[in-house]
Image (tube, rainbow, N blue to C red):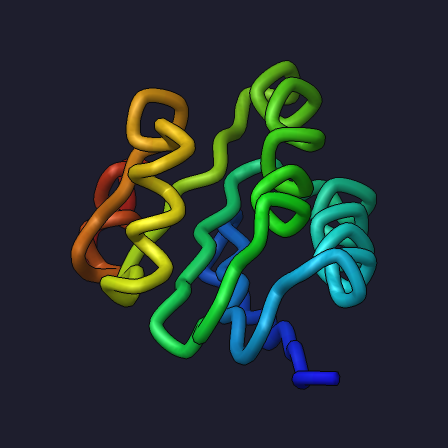
Amino acid sequence: MKEFLVFEKNFDNIKILNLKGFLDASSASKLEDSISNCLNSGYSKIIANLSELEYISSAGMGVFIAFLESIRENGGDIKFCEIPEKVFFVFDLLGFQSIFEIYQKEEEALKAFGKKI
């Protein structure tokens, strides 16, 4: 089994989740827990930095979709940044660019939430 880790950091009212490793059906619950914790702690603006994500399955992608409605109902959103090419292929294949905002750099995603860097 490949390892999956989530590292969290705060930037004012934004939670940044740095994902590392392999996100698949067996590790999706870790991501679910992290996003649930964000919402329970009052964070509805989330940036998923995927710079260290090596693999994502449809189950992993489904976690983001599952939370999207409640996040947006709370005035927030999930924005993605620094997606490796092989992971972006899955985003492209599933049409996620039409659902989520994707940025090259974390700073760009922060600015999209109205933060001055």
